[in-house]
Image 1 (tube, rainbow, N blue to C red):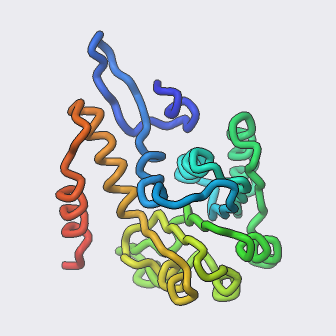
Image 2 (image 1 turned 180 degrees about the horizontal axis):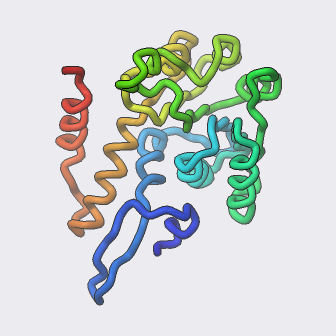
Amino acid sequence: LSPLAQRLGAVNTLVRRPQGGWLGTNTDVEGFLAPLRDGDWQGQRAVVLGCGGSALAVLAGLEQLGFGSITVAGRNSTALAALQEGCRSWLPALEPLAWTTADEALLLQALAQADLVVNCTPVGMASSSDPMAASRSPLSAAALDRLRPGCGVYDLIYTPRPTALLLGASARGCRAWDGLEMLVAQGAAALRLWSGRDTVPVAAMRQAALERLEPS
């Protein structure tokens, strides 16, 4: 396993070694970072919504960007504690936050100070079995109102485009990114590893993804 795959405890790409055997690695972090690399995030504050599997890759990316404060809001206290323990050795800036429907006070305070908010929950993802799923947002209207204009809001969901979260954030003057670029960039990173080429057809990959996501 590559050092990154070991840190994340997850492999999404296998690469054949020239000397034989396989290397297991992970391109999720590179994908997540793609739309953020042009910004200066050093010392800034991030709030991550959710503590599932995708959150770990997001945290590794935020650490690379130099965020000074990273708050993870989770509804599952056991999963939140496990995430904090798994990151303790390499991400001392992580601050766990219990996210409850009954008491959003701590989350509202964190959002008011945030420079970047990342949604790692599935709330707002389109679902064929639930017509209302795509209309939901992980943040209430009161929580969205706490975001400062210019704050970045990054939703890992890429269907629908835009999500209810990003519609609400954009209406409040926030910068918005969905998960399409992460999807394309992590695939492009894998293709570079498989082909041994530095240049891969990223634009064509993005267009193919857009066409597939267009409603029929």
